[in-house]
Length: 282
Image (cartoon, rainbow, N blue to C red; front, side, top):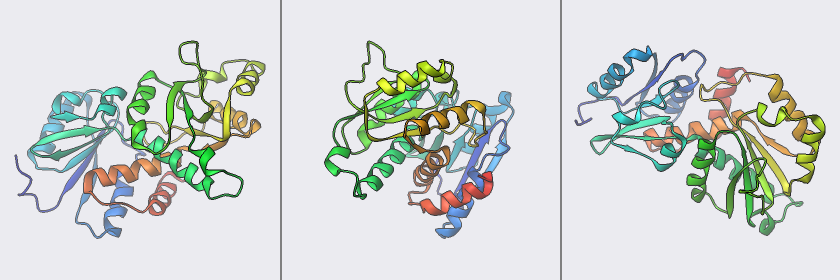
């Protein structure tokens, strides 16, 4: 199938539910700013009709789609190619029609790592941070699903620096032999279930790098709800003087990657952040 017959490139956002997802709002503003004749729209698809809906966007010659839950784990059979990191994550978040086939990718792991690099580079410019020390061998700990850990391991080669990715807290099979530079937090209850003294010992005994940073992972739905566990994590991090990259920062990088994935153009990070804050009332 050729997309030459399509005058205006179209990108669908498919999920169930889709209420509160900022994709259409943010991407529409970005294409206007870039003076691109693209259109983004959102559709809530009944789970039993997902295959029909996806075949429909292909038949209509659309250029791509954002894939929301619950379809991120079931779309791969309809694709001609899936990235290695999406296979590791077990989820496809974005697809596009390219070279007469649908190709799929996940952009969460890439966004997490980009947000870390952006923070490290900004810290290097400060007097208190040594450039050589910032890019020495470090570890990235992951509090979350094994699939996310594996996706980060696949994507780690895309960023500068010498990092390995380990589960946190590290076990006997994955010791933290390197200083922990970043802590990726996806599951807020994993360590909060420990007693306060046990948590304190865990953080105190960990070999932290200079200026460590915690990265809070946004949910797949695209919006962030306040929770007791999240508040406890933030208090814990602050008590140990660990900096924080919040969910909106990661989403900002993820939307920039998504926009480039579909259109081939770079987007303004500032514009994405402003749009997300406006839409999500952050």
